[in-house]
Length: 132
Image 1: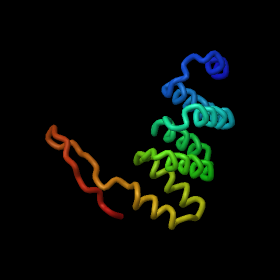
Image 2: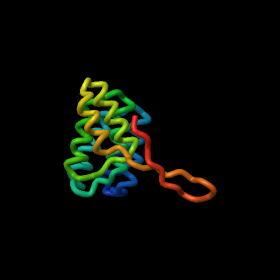
Image 3: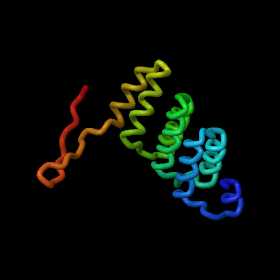
Image 4: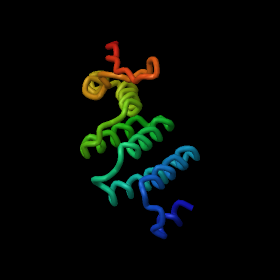
């Protein structure tokens, strides 16, 4: 279905790509997800969203591929896309699994959120995150 959809030129949107990557992840078809990811990067080099980068990093995380996580993250940094908190944690864990603790510290120092938001008495309150 994915090949037919993409060959017809139908649904070549970021939302469709996101759903296809999720489906490939759930079915364990990492090679097809990589093929689709390469296509996405070739066609939409400068407009790939944070959500798609996060989806691909999540896919590699589910299948225990820390080297690939770091490859996608380096592409993400190269294109100037700022990662979300979950992505930072996954990349940090990949550095840790590969024995690169110093890189993990630098990553957390650069991207870890300084504040988080809580809801208190019906209002949104900004709270400084505690340092570990």
